[in-house]
Image (cartoon, rainbow over all chains, first blue to last red; front, side, top):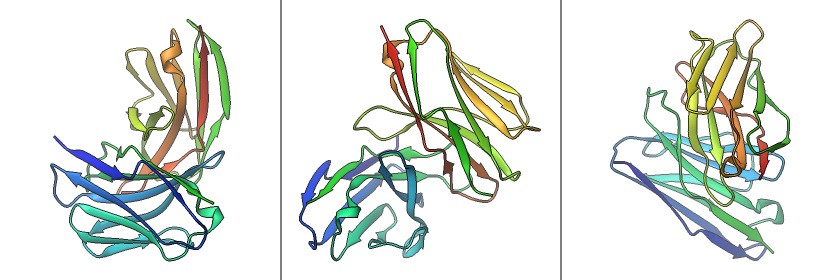
Length: 113
Length: 112
């Protein structure tokens, strides 16, 4: 069966520090991968999605970047965090062409102080 | 064109009552409409989904009603239980796109 792992679960970082959040999927190959941010009252905001290694699409201009160095690995990064980067970050995967929906990870609660 | 509008933002229901959450979409190319359930501190999980070729889909106490002409769909939770207290998201996507467009969520509280 497929599983998605996301870490760390919580993170407190100072303003201006770098960020690296990692997401890995097991039990499948060539998944579509997504990074979402969830802020209070704003629902689920799609940040990046990837349909293959090295293929990244950005949905929202921001202080963040994403990379997919391996088929089942998706990384969210920032060189210098802002206070506004605080939020709940969720990774998700889906099958290409499968309309069965997304499977989300358990999320990372990021607080920038 | 890509928005999915969800209401209400929050909902309080008594145990045993019916919870109703409504969504409206703009993109007529949308052909897949899932609902996700999210408990605090967890990622959303797929609850139930519908395609526009049917007007209703039922799974246990959860029912999606779909009105294609009005571009609206809703989630009904029958016999609501305290364990149903969570945030619910509706979403839509169109064929050929892997991206889901989510509503802003509804926080449901079921009082015992």
